[in-house]
Amino acid sequence: MITIQEAKKRFQGVCVPIATIFHEDGSLDLDSLASNVQWMIDQGAKEGNTIFLAAGSGGDFSVMNVEERKQVIQTIAEVTAGKVPTICGVQSTDIRDTIAICQHAEKVGIDLAQISGHYYYTPIPGDVVAWHEEVARHTSIGFAAYSHWYSGSKYDVPVSLMERLIEIKNTVAVKWASPVFGNYYDGMVAFLPKAAVIDNSAMTLTGHILGCRAFISHVPNFLPQQPWKVFDLLQQGKYEEARKLDDAFGESYSKFNTMITSESTGEGIFVKPWMEAVGLKGGISRLPSRTQAVTPEIQDGIKKFLDDYAQTLS
Image (cartoon, rainbow, N blue to C red):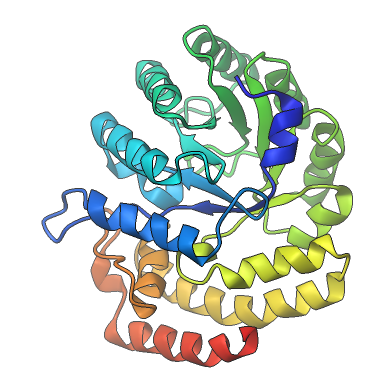
């Protein structure tokens, strides 16, 4: 199992939730998935600037069965082959599924399992701790304790609960977010000495100033140079330049994504049209995400924006 110090060293840069690709009939398109991952590696994804996240929420884990999730995880693991640190999502409402996915991920060479408690019921701290402890009894894979549940409750995870999860032997990393700045700040200060931390609150500059060296972004699925350049500027301490670069992209990126997600739910659904715009296969989304929410006008607007924006990165 990876150590905390190894995790801090290796898990730096942009953590990209890899979009899962489906055929038109809704079945998994593992060949296109592998091709897209290889494309990111060919663009320059490597240890030190990128972390891959397989079968997370951005990878539509919630609309796949366990065997499909295993196939996606294995496909990505085979392409990365140790070249890029890789995490996989193992969230489930059935702990037996979480354990099975952890065991499979460990077998195929995934570095960490992104784990949270049962995400249907309102989280109770003791239940969450018991869940993590039980999973840890059945696997040696490292844990990235995840501070978000898909309950729709906007539950703000207490720092004290995450600290209890860090004490579990498998936990070497934390993927941290909070809608309340004070809780976000307190968590960063508490966790950074104890684990590798990935910022999931879109507070990229603030997190870096506090000492966090990894942040979530879907953008490497189609334009990795943008967040890589932001990360490079952060590492150089050029915070104002990083902010300006991020803002210049983020305003239009958020506008188009909001146009999509105001019509249909999900994460994969708003990433895929950007992938299509650069010639990669994004493909359809599974229900409840409705592919029709991406209108021709939105797709054309994304393509035009990317064509114009690419000139700023050259």
